[in-house]
View 1: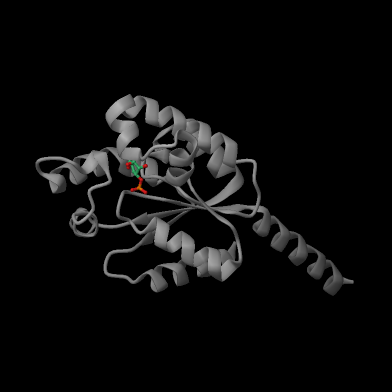
View 2: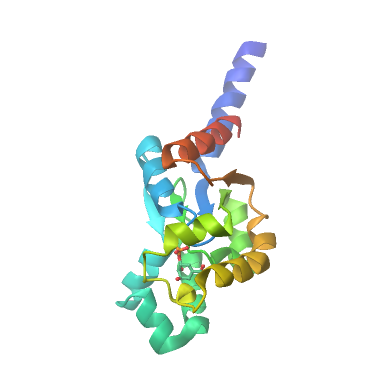
Length: 186
Ligand code: S3P
């Protein structure tokens, strides 16, 4: 009797975890996209990137959106994309670095998903992003200073995640292994 009750509970909790989305948040260069794609393979789930959805919806790149329509417009589209995707079940969502700063986004994502914050030191984020030119917010005279400034403002938002994964000095495989461990315990 007790055994069958346990099995039913386990099945229910597995179904509950499977229905939940897995959301990756964090600063630009945190490794969200590579981790999201690796997790999608390991868990056989579909992966969606808010940035890719925005570019598809707008038919232009994020750099073009920032340049011609401004950041406020970009954030509006970002919010629309999050609203569209949140009702889905069992997917992996790779969030652009600013998604969790909007309380509506963070509230709805937290409700439907297990949220992982991939954190890294400013120096590491700088090293990982310095070779790329597609991020408008990092096109600064002193990108490391900009990273430090933005991270200071954003850290309290990112800390609202369910789990924090420190990625500095770790490979993508190690990061995903840690996420998988947390998922086992959910
Ligand atoms: C942004 C992060 C970017 C992209 C846009 C703004 C941010 O995504 O959404 O350039 O505000 O941190 P990644 O975090 O995937 O680079």
